Length: 347
Image (cartoon, rainbow, N blue to C red):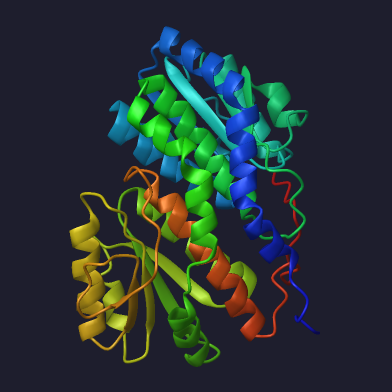
């Protein structure tokens, strides 16, 4: 199999800045009207319904909700309704369902159940005519355009931006909203960051090896997505940990040459992430971090945005560009991972 031609995954990574620009242009009216409805309802807490990459986007939104709005957000397993048949009380809640296809029956069923028990339900999806969109009070299209590679990249990023923009507008945080609108040019720069050192470290580790991805706060959601993409596109076993956890039990498997990628933003967690990345480097790990503060670990080129909450979005774009190359180096076509298809309809 020849991978000399550019993959669909790489083309779609390159499309991310334009997709975000399109979202910011075409999605404004939906964001404004939905945010106003949420303010009028004054929810006491938030719920999320999602799986896979979409669930990682929801985890990012969880941190945004709790850090920006001071409102707790909980992920509810779709099987609660689809398998166990239980209705969970939704009164007083804002429920956000995230699905690029909007097709999965279990996501739709739980979303519909929340609506029937009193939640205000919002769908974030790439298909505004999907069953999920039909089941919610409000639908926010992510305007990503067709995504043909099995691995979600531009739909993940536009889902992040849609959820963040909604919550920022609920808060009416002008500084954050301005930072969101500055993202397209910054994400273009993020696609060009050179992570060759990490590619070499990961590919030289050999088959059958594992690696860690790390983060804390909003960056931990990005770490979760990165670990999934290693498994999905490269057939590399990767585990994501918070830097608050990794030095407990997981550190025991770290040995010389063990790859680690730590995602840090310019936020209150950066010093902790750097400290852990450096500590793992001292234990022999090939430790990398998106921070200028590291001393023992290796600095990865990164783009800082106009707000610390948006920094992780740039980090995942740079990561996507890197992981696509890792797949190619391993002779794997990331567009068609084995055993996987684009849409998984779980019941």
